[in-house]
Length: 98
Length: 469
Image (cartoon, rainbow over all chains, first blue to last red; front, side, top):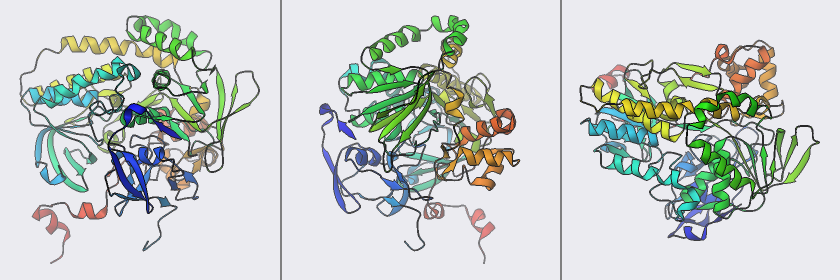
């Protein structure tokens, strides 16, 4: 659960997460935008399908990986949201052909 | 900018735009070198000055004067003549000083005559039971969200661990209006006595007064539980509570929506290790540090390491190390450089404060070498118990451990578990961490897609070497 400082209001950016439209602040990373929108978990792990969410927010832990505009396993904390971006969360390990 | 816009060669490539990288870029560009500064974040500043050019936190008292001082370094680098590229990920560096760099999904290989690795620090792994649950993050993660997006934890928030950055984060969050329900301080009770003989170097540093003021500011507003000896995060699909025991007391459980963990920072060594730079185990800081000469020169000819990636000494020291490395590069390449004596003295003053700080905030063994049920490798979900079992079977180091358990083989490439694996094996088999060794790191140190790799331009000779017909 996160809340935005009142002074941080800025131009909104709208992007899609698993088909649902989410509003973020211009300049947010995907990981920050998902947390701000209250989305949890943001991923199910590859080994045991256990719930995960962004952990380090600085490109180290790879917990925030998402599929961005069709490219899998992007680090959500290192990619900034853009209008119309399509983000898909990762649910467990990847299947062949999926 | 995309990878296509990069030149095929530069005099010097600096990796990381924190204080060390910015300073090294300024020094080398000012000396007349063709300098490229690449950084994987959206803006310059590294972690310490993250979001310095774009932060929505306008009230300057929230992040404090030390944060805002980073702006001058960015302005200096931007006017130095260096080429600065953000959102650029260096995924490879080899002994021939060839770098693989990805920008906006396009990769290029380029050559440098010198490389300065300024990849900074990352938070020390903090493996406790339940630390993979959503709601558990590092303190640095919360600080990043505040600096770059103006986001604060809402709901019940617990901060746990040890180290000066923990206090700083707590103070910044409180000033911004967040509520912190408890600070669970894991600093062992004996640390102060051990640190006392080393106070001389610290007393001369401005950090003493700053630290004392910060401590009082936080302790006035938050309940602090001292000498916490065990810690676990509880919940099923997300964090619900934190269970802890303080020295001599029974176990207690407090509800929590967010748990922020921190027990100091360690050098982020992946790129340097992948390039073959020799590293040594630092006994005082419990981590790997590159073996370096005074100007940051590493064991690989032409590669320098500067900043906290060279051994943790803080933002000011990082800047001085960046300047010294930049000047050494310029001198190597035949350029005139200013006298560095003043900078060396300032660096020494910063470094003299470290033995006291490192000893005072020495993280307890129980939080570095965890209980059996704690997951150690978050990617492959390997527990401390499984690592201990492999070590008892005769596994001698983290590289052999991969074959036993897959620990260290997930997408983070051992960043989150490497130090813990070394210390766990050392502890189980009664060896020194230096004798156990570290995970071998190989490029690509950050994942890139096969199509991006295949899309790189290759010289005819390279294509002929592998293509038929």
